[in-house]
Amino acid sequence: MNGQTPPIDYTNLGYDALRSAMLARAQQSLPEWTDFSENDLGVLLIELFAYACDITMYYQTRIAGNLLPATADEPDALVQMLRLIGYELQPPAPATVNLTLQFDAAEPTPILLPSRTQFTVPLASGQQLVFETERDIAIQQAQLTPPDSRNLRSFFPVPVVQGQTVYNELIGTADGTPGQMYQLRQQPVIAESISVIITEPGGDTVWAEVTTFAESTPADRHFVVQRDAQGTATVVFGDGVNGMVPPQNTAATPVTINATYRVGGGPTGNLPAGTVFKSSLSNVRGATNPQAAAGGTPTEDVNRARSLAPRLYRTQERAVTISDYTDLAAWVPGVGKARAVVGTWNQILLSVAPSGQVADPSELLKQDLLAFFESRRMATTTLEILGPQPADIYLSADVQAAPYYLQSDVQVAVENAVSSYLDFDSVDFGQPIYLSKIYDVVQSLPQVMSLNVTEFSRAPAMPGQAAQIASNGLIQLADTELPRPGYRDNPPAGVTPTPIRTTMTGGVAQPGNAS
Image (tube, rainbow, N blue to C red; front, top):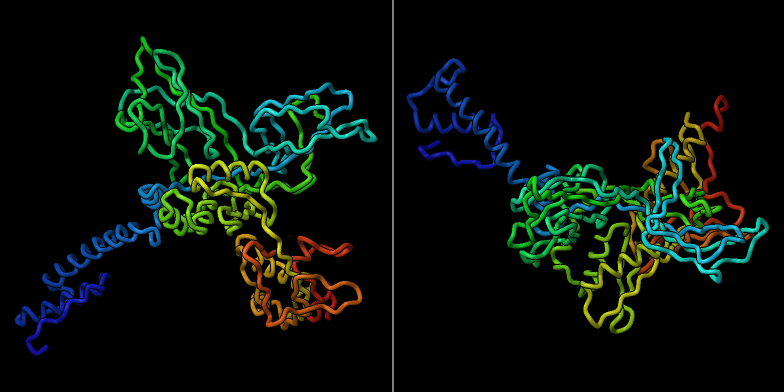
């Protein structure tokens, strides 16, 4: 080593690297030490020290990795970190849908539907999926259709949202300390559905949910809601400086805390059109949804939070630029995709697709969006909520199946591959669709020998017309368009819905017969 001290490699984090580096340093510093066998006491001490350093560096690296959203791999650590910048993981969002209700023609009007009127749908598991109205609805005579052949009159729309209300759950008794926290027993709790009533010495008081205590005074009866990585919701009260502290419970003056909230949400509520609902009201003779329910989403994925949280932090809860409207809209429960464009000089057009499908947002989702942006938009700016413009992608192909594969299985695999490429969660507004990508996702299947795409266009081939392939192998979409498989979601009359129309050759036509 020519008498020079060997450089220290600070990237050597493993046990073997640390052991080798320390032995090399020992050879340089202590030339009289020549026995480096495992029996030597000095080697034993170095190995013990390398082991301790290895463990210490492991935990230091873990700690450092969990200090940034991009590298955090501990769910609880990520939740706490995002909370520091005001971001909470979103719970499952409930599906919303507009129902058509039927009544006897002789039913007296007005017909009253109280808030929280329930409509249920039985699931294959035996459970009941519950939908509820969110406000009182009074149906007048003029709003009903003329009697049909069954002497029934109809009314549309009745907006309902999936979920069930839990009434007056006792979540604790106040102890008078700052920052009291009480967990709700049931989950998942739908966002912004919690109301808290505390029995104080002067009577029952209603406490309001806020997103932060930053603007709460010591006299404000406010609470915030925090959710852990497992989805459990916790009600948090103020510390007496920001937000009032619930008074201490005593035998003489009991202070009980009760919560009313709604549980539900998730993609299970995205029911198809024509589903039959059962009503809790005896005068409802029928209830169906002309359009599919939409907006039900699972608990927010941590990877989505990693990318969305910094963008929302940049907006600082203010919608000024076009990207601000797009980013903030994605935070509203039930929104799957959003894209904002400029209308007139003071108008923003916000195209929104509910979670899971290329469809118009329900009236409830539109109201939620308008209420959400009311305190965030500029005073002179008007906001209009629109649905997405469906961009139908019509695909046909000649597919040669690999030997020994059933043609029916190959066809299913090809359809699934195309569906994945055009899946709602895989596309975005204005995203171009490439013919080369269709070849890529299909030809990568082991069941496919060869592929020849014969149709790749925005319009289906009509009888007697040749199928078209978009020039340059590219379908460019407008900013407010969302792609979807045309033959599946908007097939021509008489065509079986399918993501891609295929003509199969090769493989095995059916079990026992070679093709």
